[in-house]
Amino acid sequence: RLSPRGYMGLHLTIGVLLLIGAAWLFGGIAQDVVAGDPLTVIDKNVAEWFHERQTPGVTTTMQLVTELASATWVTGVMMVAALVLWWRRYWFRMLALVLVIPGGMGLNVLMKIAFHRHRPSFAKSFLIFHGYSFPSGHTMAATLLYGVLAAFAVISLDAWRWQVGAVLGAFVMVLLVGFSRVYLGAHYLSDVLGAAAAGLAWLALCLTAVDTLRRSLDRMD
Image (cartoon, rainbow, N blue to C red):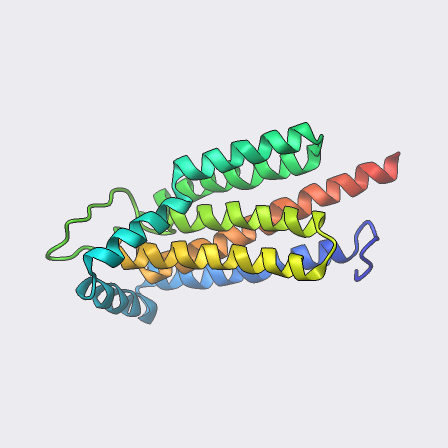
């Protein structure tokens, strides 16, 4: 289970551990949201705290940051990445890209409908958001997009410093997008945390499945 070259080795072990851990975290957050546990009280306090301290300058900045996970941006980056992968004939990575992003965003829509949680509401707010709140679509999109790009970078880069940098870069992007959603009042804190956990679980599932398929086909050759 710890051999990096084995068919059912290190890649599968890490993938399963990430999947189980992220799914467990999402389940705990979702349970609190459904049951109205103390986490939802923290949600409201955090939302009110940021709303009362919004300033025009920071709000404009956060609106720009949140666009780093907008549907237009994510689709554009995904298409460019797909073209590069197609040009270099990285078929399994292209399969992973298609499963991770469109598949993950489809899953997000289904979860929003299933939980049908309403977005934060304030007495005075000039920002209007539509749709259900849990889990955050922008945060999940950021987790999927920057997570899969970081995974490709780790595979392609040899120096561990660059590999760690790619992972940290993806983490920072997700953190910024998630923070922007809470600051703007588009989502509660638990919406963001739940989306990151769900995105990581889906990312781990897709990458592990595709890599296992690749190794299985290699063994058959």
